[in-house]
Structures are given as structure tokens and as C-alpha cells.
Length: 352
Image 1 (spheres, rainbow, N blue to C red):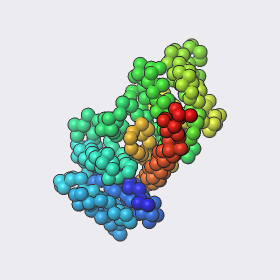
Image 2 (cartoon, rainbow, N blue to C red):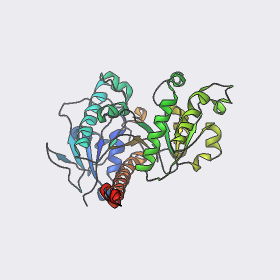
Image 3 (tube, one colour):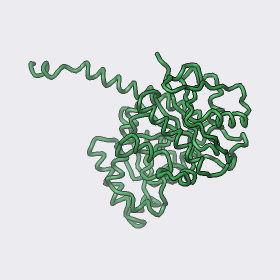
Image 4 (cartoon, helix red, strand yellow):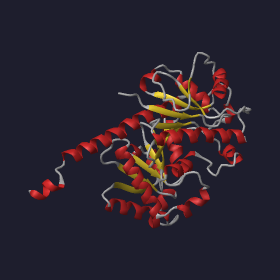
């Protein structure tokens, strides 16, 4: 069987993205598990390779139209410009070349030249300086994939947390929430847990927005106006969903371990407990895309860029999860195809 091909974007060239990528790829077992394809630039990669002192790490540069080679660390040269690296600083080039790397990887995964994408971190300020309308990966991927909605999920072996709202100011969260939005996110999470993670009947918990889940309306009406109605509607559709739960007690008591998926209403409500429990072992997964995309659960970490201090743990996990998710998705499709093959044809059913 042909090895899974995983594309890896360079991220912001001034951050720790390439450092953690190179540290991850130095493990010989990587080439046994999948075929890596780095999207970036050979000169930039060599610059970062010197920082992490991995002179023996060599890349097979792919020429136009050439397929990735198994057993090799493949590299797609996305640009030939001479670029000045400013480690630890936001810059137009940091955003520009992160986007070029991402564009080529998305183009290839859509064509089927690679099977999944692992994205290294980008910096929102760099993306803005580069003039991009997309300040992060998720909105860009959603647009290019042509899907109406996706779900940012943080995934580890301990828990899986989805976010109803992600990178918006906290003051905007209450006005952004609606029953329809929450229900859409529940449906995406439920489908992803079944198809991507192989959980037949996933149990999902919805968290409340306000302290004590609103204290029966005393601290706000979001729980009764939006969250609970969305949970009730999901139950009517046959989903196993409950809540809203007060987030402090939900995580503090260990109740989270009883659920397959947890839906948080805003970024820090989900990310703080997730990173507390799974830092450097968790990954970001975009549910709802027609292809697999994962990324490490950290940012560009400009403060340590170029110092050879970055831990590659989360990047390694992002690569492993990408491989496993591809296999799980293929298994689900194969299972559904087998079910359809076993079903009698409509003409046979009507003749009985």
C-alpha cells in the first residue's frame, strides 16, 4: 500500500515553525509512517537547519509535476525570491511567504497530490502587514474548500474541545452567539467524531457562557435563549448532547472525561483547560473540511525564535494525528461502501 503523503507548511519564517518541523522530521520513524512534503524554500529551510544543528538532514527538492518520493524528506520550493529573515519579529515577508506555502499545499491536497496538511503557525500581525484578508488558517481554508462552516477543534488523547467562536474579542461573543450557530457547531462536531475519530454514538457536552451557566438567568440569558434551545434541538435530531454546564465545575470535577466531545462558547473557555491538560501533546484540527488539516497547539513563539529552544512535541503529534485521521476517514468510507454493497437493490426490495 502506498504511504500516506502529508504536506507540511512552513508557517511564519520568523517564528519557530521550521524549527519544530525540522526537529520532528529528524526522527527516522517518520519516513516509515508516512511521506512528508515540506512546502517552503530550500534556502530558508537550510537557514533554520543550521540553527537547530541538523546538517545531516537533507531534502529531496521536487520539480514541477514530480510526485513525492517515499522514504525521502520531500520539499516543494514555493518561491525563489531572496528573503531577509527577521527572527522574532512580525513582518510583511513573514505573512507573504507563509501564505505562499499554504496556497501551494492547499492546491496539492485538493488535486490529491498529498493526503493531508499540517500547518506551522502564522502570525496575525505578519498576515495583516502582508495585506492578507485572512489573518489565520481557518478562514482561508474554509474559503478555498468552498464549505459554509467549519469547527476549530483542539484534540488530544485526553479530550476533544470545539469552539463555537474562536478568534474574536470577548466583548463580541454574546452578540455573536445564536441558537443556529451553536446547533451548526454541534452538528459538525458530531459528524466529525463519528467519521474522523471512529466514535459511533458520540456524547457531546455544551458549556454555558456565563459563570454558573447563567445561574438560571440571574447572570445573563444566553444559556436559556441560545445554548439550551440548541441542545434540545440537537436531541430532537437524535444526537447525544447535554448541557449547558458551568465550565469551572465541569473541568474541575473531572466530568469532562465522561464525554467524547466538549463544545466551548469562546476561545479561552476551551483552550485554557485543554492546554492545561494537554500542552505540547494536543493539536488543532479543522473539522468540516473535505480534507484533513492539523496544526500544533502553539503559535509562532517569537520570543524564542532562533534560540533552538522550541519543543517539537505538538508538531510531532500534529503529524501523527493527520496520518491517523486519514486512515480513520478511509475506514469510515470503506465501511459505508461495504454497507451499501450488502443492501439489496431497490428493484430487489420491490419484487419481494
